[in-house]
Length: 146
Image 1: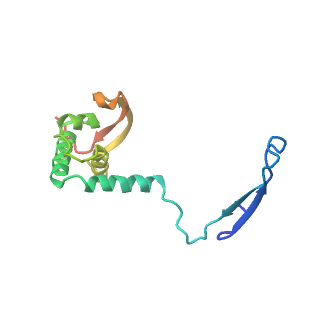
Image 2: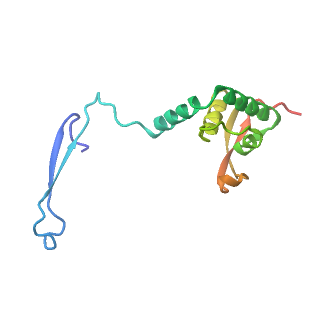
Image 3: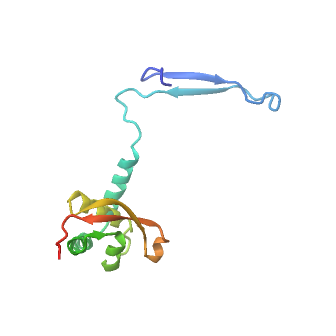
């Protein structure tokens, strides 16, 4: 396919792999169309992630999002490093019908607004429903020393 011009279709015929075992099997015909340069290719993983996060964010009530972001800001001001476990410990329950992935969106917003930044460190989550998975440690960029 590398040498196939953009916007063209090529056909290949492949003989059966085991003609002795399957004598009646016809050759397989494979047709590959290489998209034209103006055709948008499938969405990348990051685009799908961002679209999902935006949907989860929009489907969470604004007042809950405001409270959650305020709590995250307060945690970042009094702790040099924080994890999602720290936030889950102080968050009010998620509203009915809201997806827990809203926490990831909340953290991405905090990174985008330069409240926190991800470190290279990971720790094992202490939340029971996290099943001992590793979570990233974030450094506060708004920490008030002392």
